[in-house]
Length: 76
Image (tube, rainbow, N blue to C red):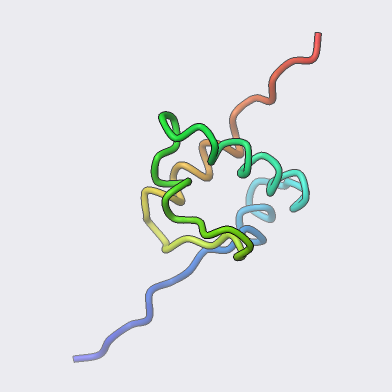
């Protein structure tokens, strides 16, 4: 029986996948994590001053993808 290490997905991985600038992505995630009603696991899974990383397949990762692919608010 072998114990496989759980795969971790970093913000850099997501930025490469979604073709986003890491600085913009961090800003979007910080804003989304304040919306605890919309993104409860995103806020719960991230510790302040720590890198953004999630376990592959986690609810927090799904919420991060959702937050990063959401349309930015219009500035009209």
